[in-house]
Length: 455
Image (cartoon, rainbow, N blue to C red; front, side, top):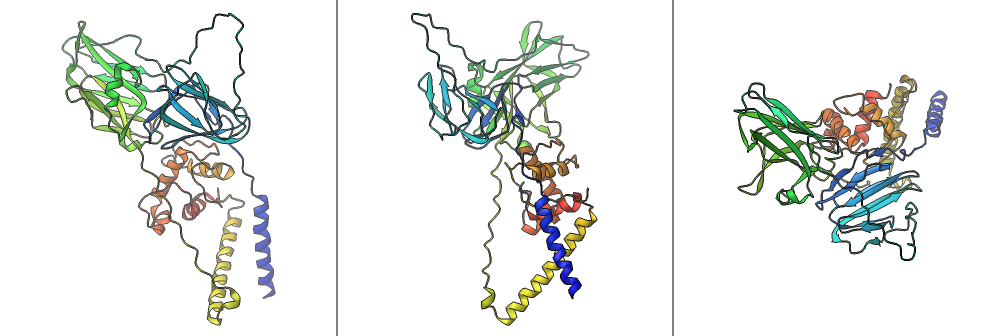
């Protein structure tokens, strides 16, 4: 009996030491999320599209159904533009620039905090106005410039909005050999058309023109997109075919059309619903094509029989399942327990001690291997998230991106869902869940620790 007493004491001291040695939580770098090009994203619950300027760098970035959240740190900076001139309410009290063509805010981080931007369809009505928000200290307003007397005012300059990006020149297509035409957008994505031999009756030329959805020439067609879908990347693609200088829209053999996309472009959308669609002038509606989605390479492909306006559409992702709260059982104080109740509690404690001993043996057997000891969810950051991403990246099917940043973002959540679905019996079955939730709870941690805790 004395030996058991000292053994239990050793367990308690050892576990207390593990708590003291646990690494402290760290924050993501100020430039964890960077925007190398002008990027358009949709606040999908409102149907409002916002553009993030090239050169923006922040610690974290997430688009929700009606808001956009930005994690700021010293050194981070972001410019957000609404080409429809909507009001951009934000929690950093950032001044909003309003012109006849767009509204925008620019925020530079001085301290670590999260800014929430709430777009609105209400139009701004002055050249520069302050949008009410909290008095956070992370926004640095631009200096006020007083013009010299009788000086001729400089013409107003605006940041360049997304431009039409087309192939430098039409691509030649021959009767015998067919050909391939391709265009690259200013977001770095590609649109491609592959025509087989004998698709045309005479040598022809193909041109692909990506046009942003806010441009007047495609505004009417974009307005016809179903409310349940969004235009991925904000582009409509005009495919044209000319034979001997004359425009034609059909060809003799089926052609293969493909688009690439980025994770940021489909944020808030269900990737499995991505569809290539064409605009039917006779019905003034978009028609979905049978589309193959390659989620690993971020590419979609479809077969087409004619050329017109095309777009890549996606449906909004459903709201994540909420883990039901379990009410804590009513515990009778020890002083009020009966002898039978006391014996039952002692039996539970004995079982718990045995389980703790087994866990201690696992830790010792792992020779210092790390364990996940806390629940994790979207938006978390720190060493525990880094460990989670490291383990998930060991399975290329579950987490092909293998990004270890210490920030629990949409890619990490998607990887957790794939992991939970893969180990359904161990992780989801105990809760009677039909599919993964992306929340790293007790059964998910247990399975991760069992698989990777000794590495």
